[in-house]
Structure formats: structure tokens, C-alpha cells
Image (cartoon, rainbow, N blue to C red; front, side, top):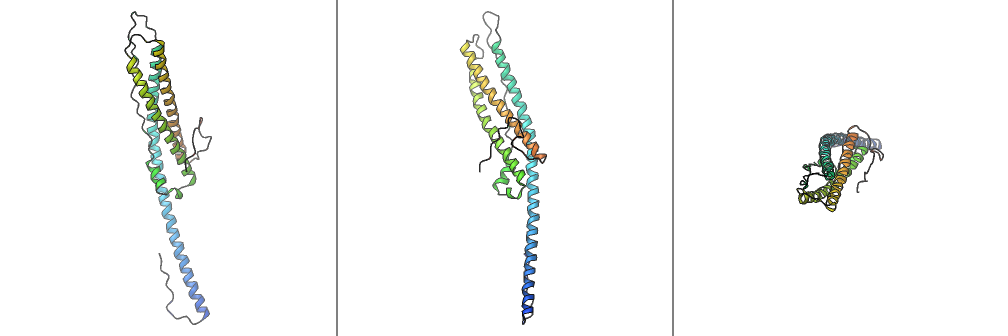
Length: 230
């Protein structure tokens, strides 16, 4: 802050009084203007730094999501192979034990939102462009939806693994046993398909944001974005 100093000489006329008041007023206006300019420049620097961190996180998340999608594809291929093995009718008598293909471990790494949460919880969103904030709200909601569905997929996988543990190695599967396995395979595959779709959306939304474009309601096919809670 700048101190505005009044003239030291005594004031004996109205003219001197007006000059005195004008001097103080102009000095205050200059001080306020300088302070606001400094604050504006500081906010611009803050906004640029936050935007840079958010975009760096977006780049990292696109890489993470690509790995997640590849893991989903490998698991979906294994699910199909297990289902196909149920269709195989062994001609040997007695029937050979049913040995389904191995269901590989799946690793879904949750895309990070650390920088977004820092900006949101420190009340810094107001200094960022509104379009950028709206984009990251949509990314966050989609990311959270993917995380919830991934938990459902994990529970479905536990049920499937339990069935495979019971029936793998048996020489005769009746129609009821085979149906139970097929239903578990289909449920798990459906969850993974939804997780994969949402992960694809997360990657696409991050890329749109990195391209400095606005995410609209019709941006993605099969869009299932939800409005963020306020």
C-alpha cells in the first residue's frame, strides 16, 4: 500500500482546501489502482499455474486411461474365450475335465484428480476461465462414475471367480452349471464394457480440454455425463 501524504503547509483559503482534498483523492485513486493491478497480475499468474497443473494431469490421465482400456480389452477377450470353451463338446468318453482359459488379472488405475481437488477445495476456481472449470467438472463426474462402475465390476468378478473355482476341472457340466457360468460371464463383461466406455470418455474429455475446446452435451456418442452436484 502507498501512503498518501498531505501537504505540510497550512490551509487558509477554499482554493487551498480544494487542492488539498484533490491531492489526497488522486493519491488514493493511484494507490488503489496500483493495488488492483498488482492483484490482477497475481491472479493471472495463479490462474496460469493452476491451468498448467490441470493440463499436465490431463496428459498423464490420458496415458493411464489407455493402459486401463488395454487391460479391459484383454479381460473381455478372456471372458469370450471362457464362454466359447463352454460350447466345446468333447467327443472323448469319458468327457475330459473342463479347463477354461485363464482369466487374467485386470489393473484399472483410477485417473488422478489431485490437482482438480486442490483447485476446487482452495476456492481458486473463481480465478479460472468458466469454460475450463465447466470442462473439469464434467471430467470429474465422468471419472467418478467410472470408478463406481469399476467397483461393481470388481464385485462381479469375485462371483465369477467363485464359479470358475467350483466348476473348473469337472468332467461333466450340466446345463444349469453352464448357464450359471454364462450369466456370470455376461454380467462381468457388461460391467467392463461400461467401465471401458466411461474411461474412453474420460480420455476424450481430457483431450478436448487440452485442445482448448468446450465440452457440450452432444460431444460424445452414448454420452452419459451427469451434472455435478452443487
